[in-house]
Length: 401
View (tube, helix red, strand yellow):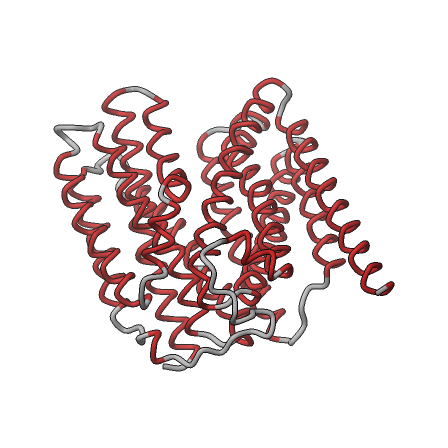
């Protein structure tokens, strides 16, 4: 199977599986809130999938590294289907099962997210990785939009059985398409020059110590995602509803706008890499600074047009840099270590996102959204300055030696 067909196959698996998981999370949260009137319980359903990679880090790592991505995808989606049937059948009698359902599907979702990165590393050569990452992972943005459209379409007449029917089809499609993937053992292992083959240690600290380039990309990715995704979680409702005083309709518009910005950013990254060029360290810093400026401009709440335009720019540049970091991590890591590194990356990123979201929520409550944006921007600028100083020091040491 050539690279284009492989990308399309992974794209369809991602689209169907992520859409099924997202619809499940949102509906379970909505149903539990309607049944109990408890906002905290409803929020717990949405937080549960983010906690799974942290709490079950070891289990996810072992399963993702245990074999070929093909059976993992197929079995994970089959398990999602079986779990969904049990959860949605019991939901009317035991609404609290929504939390257990989110944890169960969240585990299978997290396992597939790690396996996607492993699959990209195993199935694509170092040259193709930078093209495969954005095209394969764009499915998650479309899946989020598809989930929103489905829930909006069934609004007012949604029942657990309707949702079960929808997610059952999605998980079935994902599972069946997974069987079209080749066996990874049949793929020639083409490592990037930046990915030493000797790194097969289960000790992540030793692995990163022996591969400083991977350590740099991995840590930079985790910090970047924690800050930028964390602010997105804080602002996607607060900006339209609180800062601008708009109704629910504009919350939906912002979701559409942010998804569009992210999708265009991913496509732009793909075509930029097709030219054979890559982002230099200086370019990465400049785009990050511009994204922070857009973040603060959007948070000012001057008017809808300016805030939403700035928010679109923020999302576009954020996703552009996200895919750059993701491609660099995959390219700098060996296939043998990819499952370990990807699992750690997701766990650490989710921990950072949750921390920034909670801290940012408190700051927004007491100081305001713009002040929160300024504080987060200042902290990230300090981080970039430290990284730039560290890089310059290392280069100076090499020159002296």
